[in-house]
Image 1 (cartoon, rainbow, N blue to C red):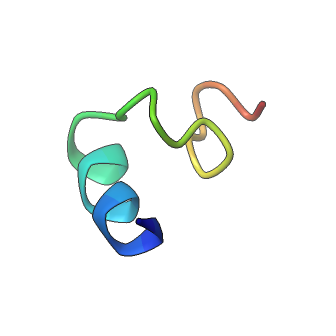
Image 2 (spheres, one colour):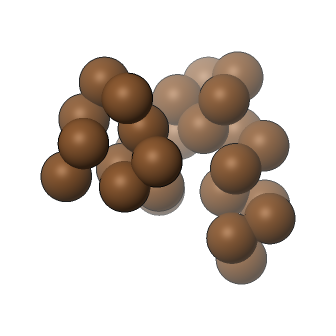
Length: 26
């Protein structure tokens, strides 16, 4: 799951991975 999250979060800033998201460091 981590691998699939890292891909979209970098392109579309997926809300699925807010931990790695720079916009929402939740």
